[in-house]
Picture 1 (cartoon, each protein chain N blue to C red):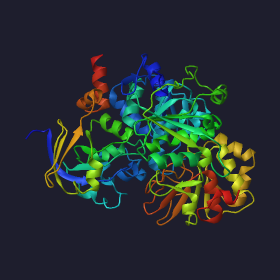
Picture 2 (tube, chains in turn blue, purple):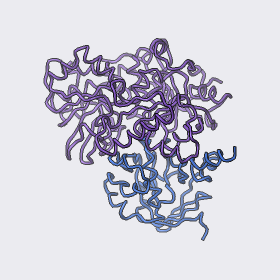
Picture 3 (cartoon, rainbow over the protein chains, first blue to last red):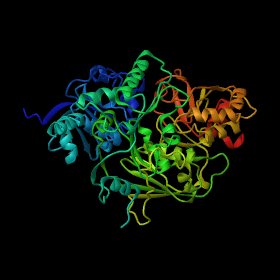
Picture 4 (cartoon, rainbow over the protein chains, first blue to last red):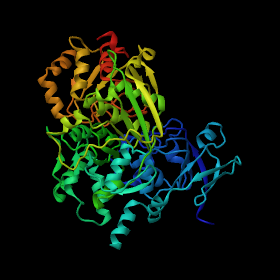
Length: 175
Length: 418
């Protein structure tokens, strides 16, 4: 199957999910990204089971301003290393967005997602089909479709390289 | 067509005329990191560059957990000291009486300067806009990249102009203004934007008050927040500036803004941000009487000498009803407070005084809450579990409101005790 079309289960979140809810400051001294998924969403009521139950390929689906608050990159690593292939949200906080791009981690800005979540048009456990290149999202369970905006050129180059550090390494090697 | 502050500073740094929406690659001036310099130095080593681009542009300030409360923190600090030595980094503030909260040190030691592009691996780096800098928080990978290359990419942001007029009434302060603004436009109201504070009321404000405003820019999603580099700023930086590379840049009168807001300080009243979001605004009158178990006067938002004086005026000659933790923003603030006799006021009132640093603000140490407890705090975030326990509540407020509440053991209106 085409690797740009992903299939998985939705974990649905509201607006303004802050970095303490995604990855609590209690675990900031942890520096190995592989150890971070076990703490994902531990402080978010109703999502305490996320870390245990999330499966590789599942999606995080959220409303506006996902990742607001701290600059901690743990909040990106804990989802990336849990195997969540892409985060779908109406909007992201600026630093979270940059942290994702700089780690080669795809995010999609999806118009109308916040209201769709509130209206129950996309729910926890729904089966989703996501075309990363086209930005198309289909909720197979409910039949609803959504459209996400792909990232801009510089961001694309960073993503292609696999993240900022790899991008800089490539540039350094070319010199 | 005129330029905004962000367009001017980023344009100068990029060496071309730029407008909102354009992507530029610029060389940042000072790059600040706190305790997270440890993991950043590990990422830096992976890039394959042996030396940082300009050691004198890096500033390291230990503040998040000082002195180290756990062996893991101690090990991080040790790695930072080794990296400082290896790279010849001279701007290093270790656990000594020269240090304090990173953002406070950046401003009082003359790193934060008008017209400089500055980055920090901490979201509250936006504080330096109080001195006219374009400063913003970035992640760790990005900071490692900046150390290696001296470059960083920015999308030139749209700008939000906030005009402020009028005078504060008794018991009302800059914290009440910024909590009201965030309550109005919400946590994402300034996402990606450069927030400019304008107007006679801003010019009348002290540097400390401006720092409180700019510090909380991130709580409405802003990329940076800034006040005009007026005479007050120039007088402040004159004797302390760490470089002469700065330039007083400000927006043109005919600059184009995504949005313009107007506030009159006379309309404001003492307020709080209720749990668990910073935009959950309420006037104190609405939550008066809510029981609290702890009061915290500290953090990069409100622990300067001006804040301590305001709190001391409320506490003078009285006794607190709940445990009250006072943590000055830096050791120079600490010393000044001691000289002015503020410590006597705090100690007579029953407060405890901690060593400068972030303290319990993000739940590291020195005042973590128990399940079911409520804290009123002068800090900038009240996210669920922020102070270490997810079953606890945090209300954010001004130093005067925090002090008044500490006296009664419940949220109280400072106007009733002043």
